Image 1 (cartoon, rainbow, N blue to C red):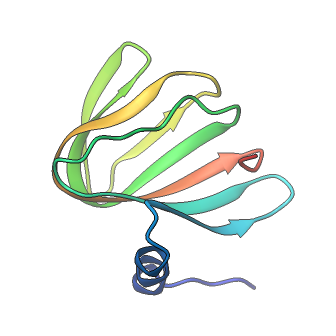
Image 2: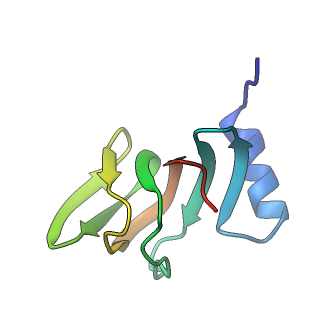
Length: 105
């Protein structure tokens, strides 16, 4: 079994001075913690993998392709491979679990 605590993952991510911490990588998927502070810009580009976001905390909007929605704690968003997407109007520090399938390359 592999088990994780969000507060430990957040501490590790912060200690490594990065917005993203991949903490699980398996044959068919990878999982990471993505952090964007309030007012920050999301620099990501489309990925080659399907992606699911689970918002752990914070508030923002996300645009996927031509669609935009507000997200907050408990929101789940699916992003198909190759589709442009980004978080914006981040009004509260955002912490998001990210699941890639297949694993992010």
